[in-house]
Image: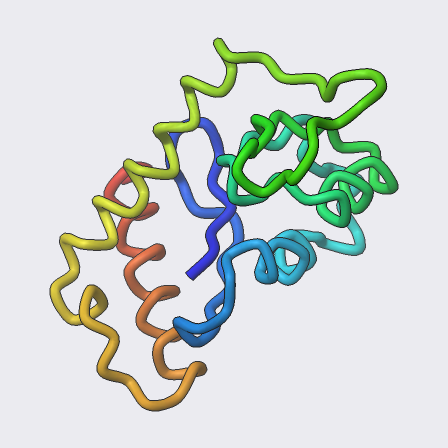
Length: 140
């Protein structure tokens, strides 16, 4: 499951795939699920962990005017990158714990943690229900 959350850990968009799909492949579907055609708002900066350090993801963000706050994953590089280093703000990256907070909230819903649903749409329905309950608790 790939999730886009705000600074407070509130869910904005979610995408799911089988366990044999790497998280970086869910990056674009997750952001596209967040885009609302009528609203001009979009994320200004996205903080992600080193698993999302891919040229394709950085280019995707750059084309949409989004700054990527992603640390360089040295394990995925055979040779060090030459040229100008990527922008990275360690202080902003520390606030990425909002994602971890979201996943701990999701784990409170015992039906969702072990994914027994056979179909993706039924699992997404449970995720949306859990997110609705979380938002209602915070706003209410």
